[in-house]
Image (cartoon, rainbow, N blue to C red):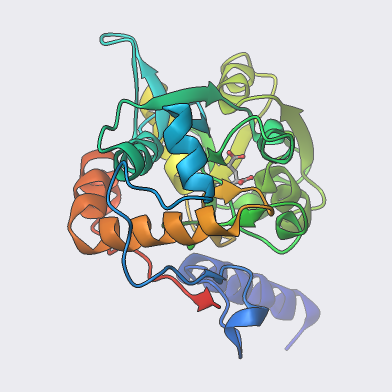
Length: 299
Ligand code: GLU
């Protein structure tokens, strides 16, 4: 086979692999090697307003509100509904469920709007009890904070103008691709295509403005975030396949393992009693049916 044919074949095979492969989370020999493994929840949860003495949850109960960092600009995930002036979305539902588990009242919630880069510093400074904001669990982040078990499995794609011929991140060599600072998305762009020109902003909606102004050619981040951006701008489209796995966890302080176990217990409940599914169907249902991911635990 001549060199031209060989390289065409290689390109075809690579393209086909990329199109067919849905990136699945890697599997690990032992749970302790898996960054998505989290602390095992107790067999049962304390009743609301009866958090055990001496626990982090008791301190939160006594304070009278749960402080959660969320995003305010991710449609269907964490966004301000201009009609109701309320924050809504899948992550907001998770935050409300956590407040309900502690207080029996989902309104006992103090929301702090966080950008991608603010998530870890705010947790470390003790300014929030937890961050629920499309937060990918990975080993590097686990050096600084702890995560709950996985509550949603996302993956990274690209968003381009409707008339763009691009089919994957590989087609964006030499083009400007946008993602916020402090996101795994920004790092993944550079890893997946070192010839793409990374443009970093603070928020995802900043990326959308840059795209609309013609200052960037594409946005690349998690499928659910891109689906929301595409809804906000009908002149754009999301292009698959997923080229990373982004397992979402709730971020918490390393100093509060009791809270991590409690949050995992609540997640198990939400995943088992239909609450997770109702929220998924409401916000992401258009992306196809999905079952809640199963937790993996260490003791
Ligand atoms: N899931 C990615 C991350 O945790 C992107 C989403 C975001 O930055 O909010 O970095």
